[in-house]
Length: 552
Image (cartoon, rainbow, N blue to C red; front, side, top):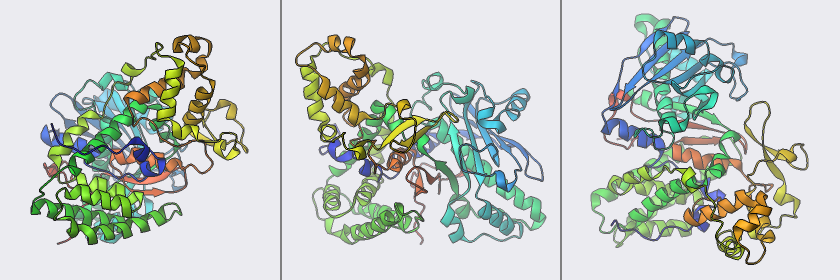
């Protein structure tokens, strides 16, 4: 049995402001994927390259695992500048992609060529696992091509300021637009953990983007052109623009969310219990904290929500480094560090420390990545044998936060969630200003729990009550699910006027492993994925790339 301190309670962890302060960690899905590629010695083929001198064409990147082979089919296009957009409603992109299950035939390539560039307007097949697209970061792309074509390396600061040369606007999977359903591939060991097929897609996209920029520099400069230096190449990730379409996921998958949070909280509890830390681990932890501070100092955002958070993060991390040597003599130094931070720093600093504390302990942490998938259908059944009084008591115990809200106050129901007719994407409406509240989606968990609590009669069999009041079935299921999965519920009213959907986005993106979180409003963000990650020929068992390396 691995020693651990008590887990942080849901009342602390599941507040939206804290979830919106999470950072990537050892159990983030990108890092889980790359550790698997190394451990199982996945083999990458040289790209099948068919891109012409104008930068138009296709390429195929194939990777062989122990049981299956996957191929990224990438299409490069030449589009007018006025058609380049981050919006999900765009109809043209610089590059489009699909991840093919196996090695595509010539007929597959032609079928995909006719459909993948169209994205939602086309259709892929169950031979494909994902569909994606990306646009250039235009000024940086042109700057890098120009520098390399003249035999020069681009300025490192300019590269770090953006962090990517292309930015995806979607990575679709799980059956969308004809792709294979999640259930068709979830029994594969390599893909059973969450979002592994999407992370593999983005990792291969990054390879294609870096090859393409060097190829275009070679076309322009001929023998004068040079490739990017390896260190500069690694500092380029893949950008992503993400909006409200991602936000409801955490509400729609409560058991899965609980599994993710439980894994992270268990990892923290194990590390906090560690005693007698040798100097070499102290020094390693110090290095991680210094990298966290450098990452915060290089975190560029122009949004009024994020700018003060970054300032506080930098100041708080500096305070932690000043405090660090004081804990060396403690019996449980990481527990002492966490408790000091919890009392003296903001949530963003606290959650950065949580992630940093996991870094030197793969033996305590990495196995928990195997606990982050759950068969949600196995927990769908309601227990109708309990009494309504027992259910009411469960609500009072676990949903006291929802019962404290005054739902007659217009501010507490100021917004409503709906699905847009044009793009079938989640959206957030203003109840007093916009039509469509009659089409509201069931994301009003707090309000619905309070309504159920008020409606429940005394000491009646729950099954009998639901036969005559079926509208409460969905929320009864959540209440009962919460008894088994205590981290399943975001403990905030998601209809409230000042709610920040970007906090939901950041929580999910932190589990992806994203960095450089940059809100562009309260409803969409830009991030960077796989920044500093090793390329296939550089993969080793040293999983310490997430924030780069410290200068010598």
